[in-house]
Image (cartoon, rainbow over all chains, first blue to last red; front, side):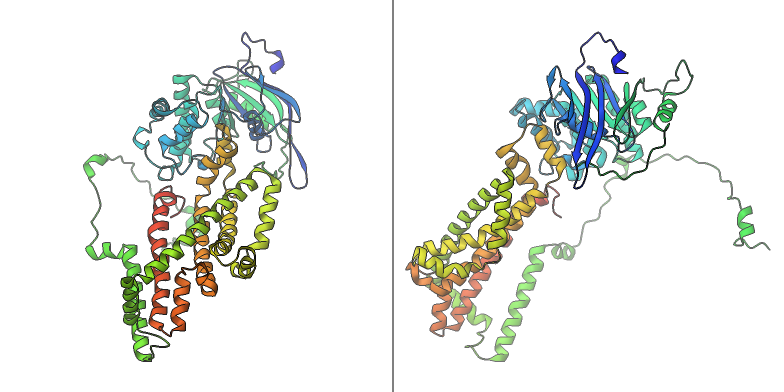
Amino acid sequence: MTACASPRLAPLLQVQGVTLQYKTEKHLVTATYRVSFDVYGADRFVLLGPSGCGKSTLLKAVGGYMAPTEGSMHLKGLPIRAPGPDRVFVFQEFDQLLPWKTVKQNVMFALTSSRKMHGKAAEAQAMRYIEKVNLAKFANSYPHTLSGGMKQRVAIARALAMEPDVLLMDEPFAALDALTRRKMQDELLALWDDTRFTVLFVTHSIPEAVLVGNRVLLLSPHPGQVKGELNSDGGDPADLASGRKLSDRIHEMLFADRIEEQEVVRHG
Amino acid sequence: MADPHTSAARLAAVPPLRPEYLCDIVASSDIGVMQKPLTVAQRLVNQAWLRKAFILVMLAAAWEAYARWLDNPLLMPTFTATLEAFQEGIVIGEILQKVTNSVVLLLKGYAVGLALAMLFTALAMMSRIGTDLLETLTSAFNPLPAIALLPLALIWFGLGDLSIIFVLVHSVLWAVALNTHSGFRSVSSTLRMVGRNYGLNGPRFIAKILIPAAFPSILTGLKIGWAFAWRTLIAAELVFGVSSGKGGLGWYIYENKNMLDIPAVFAGLLTVILIGLTVENLIFRNIETATVRRWGMQS
């Protein structure tokens, strides 16, 4: 667990005892209960759990879109209060791109709206990251002319161009077909090799967590509580003690107790 | 002989074992462009303006045929007689003068109406009480015909442009505000979060996210507002058009009716129709092509 770790460096993102609740028409729903974890620089930190474990809600809280009812969240030692360009989101939905802007304008929009860069500098930065995701040929295309995978690559380029302290990815590849998803996972790792960003990655897919993450936080459902934190090297290594594969261990931990199949109102 | 469709035979059936094979594919650069040019006729039919012009010509022909058959210029002058009256009105300059009077008044009312609509929707987006205010006012005043306010406007503002502008504002404001507001509310939560993620809030958020994202609805509102304004203006002029001393198209129609110059009445109506067609097909159509269609938000 996080408490036993004694790191050399101070964590980049500290989440301590966070309880998140939101109101629906009739109920007050507790999404997570006293969740704590630390994310360090250049981590590919995965939040993994079945649907209803509050992982997306947790990511929204880190993004500053909702305040915890209990606990605290600090980025670089400063408390998180509101959304800001130091934590950039990549959503699952394809409509996160502004349809009235071209690929290049979408990336530049992020830089200029946040007042990070202007004019030529913003354009150069935008093109640099569009080239990194291999979309230079489509820089002047409108989003509706791109495929789903290409749209997600634009969203990733837009987020990376901001050079945020931490990248927040909310199941970014879940709406893609299996072949495209596989390709995007590899591309994300190649980009990480290149720029060494810090990413907080939400997924419900065990293979994706094992492949993408270097550290995997397991959450239990209803409400989300930390079940453990595991290391991954991307190759699904066998555990030295038990000799079992990482994905099998995760599978066992997540499905150890019967998961109540329960309709959960997703927080919008 | 065994019937392959009996269940026993189906259980025993095994698909034939076929050899695997691999192929070389032709490089896409060697295939070349695979498209066939359309014929001239197909390309002509693809022109929307041409199809619409055809419809207009057919309508004019039907009008001409019916009027000739009826043979009563007091009830229904022919299309050609109307065109002559129209031409005469243009040459004398009477119609052009009336059109200018009407359009200037219309634009004033439209502009004030739009400005107020923007103000109300901005308030509605900023606060809950603003939303309540807009919703209450819209549901109360939108069904109220602008022309019904005319007597009141006459008492308040007297005989003059101000009264007409007042009823024009009333006819534009609620339609535009209603559409803009419902457009703002239907902007996806993902886009809203994206905007806030990059530090947009307040007026910058409205200008950079909400307005472009709601542009299809806003455009619909602008169109409806424009049509409402025209109707209200012509109706108001019919009632007291000469009040401003100049008179507009509505007054032109009314005046010529009194003089039983029916072709001129039709010429006045034709002018209203022509202006409507021009604004829709030149202005609004081009705005649509340059914005919502280009962005793939409307097909």
